[in-house]
Amino acid sequence: MSRRLVNLTLDTLEDLPLPCRQCVFWELDPVAAERACATGDPALEKEAWVSQTLLEWGSCGKLVYVDGMPAGFVMFAPPAYVPRSMAFPTSPVSPDAVLLMTTHIVEPFIGGGLGRMLVQGVARDLTKRGVKAVEAFGDAKYDEDVDDQHGCLAPADFFLSVGFKTVRPHPRFPRLRLELRTALSWKSDVEYALEKLLGSMNPEALLRPVRPATRSALRAIAP
Image 1 (cartoon, helix red, strand yellow):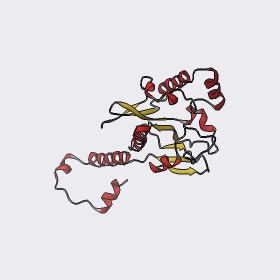
Image 2 (image 1 turned 90 degrees about the vertical axis):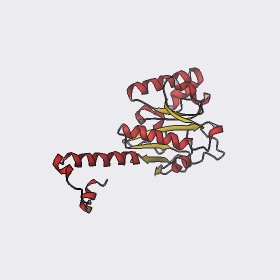
Image 3 (image 1 turned 45 degrees about the vertical axis):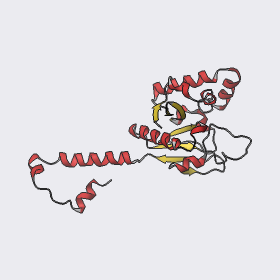
Image 4 (image 1 turned 30 degrees about the vertical axis):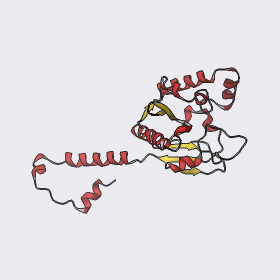
């Protein structure tokens, strides 16, 4: 079974599940979203949002394919691009964080680790772009029979299972946060420190016999 992660683009937007392709829950404020669904073309509104975000900010989503079949996706953006982000009792999103708007796995592929794969892909992407953290609004009653159930919110338990921590509790819509201090960024920091250490040595020093490192030298390059 082959798995492939790709960026969301105007071309791959067509591979979102149909209900998600026509959903503008996050992309518009509540009033505009209701108007678009009642009298407009929500799919066109979503395409316009993706196009603008790609042009102004960059990659704002990822899709995962299993054996060539679209199996799930995630969308994310700075809160300034997400009007709905101010409509929660646990708003606002922290100023140093990007909002993970929604993640969805197609039913036949649920339970195969694709959700974690998508979140890890987002973390790698944003770490390279200098982002410090990702936050999300989870649904603490996702599996319960409630009148205002909305599929655009992922379960709070899912975010907790992939490394998020609750930063603002709420009985229904907690806000959760994932710090992007990953192993990848730690490795880069260590490599940079070693390059600085080696760069400060002259060629003759590099030819001398190597002695075991002292504790103080090890502390100098430790993260």
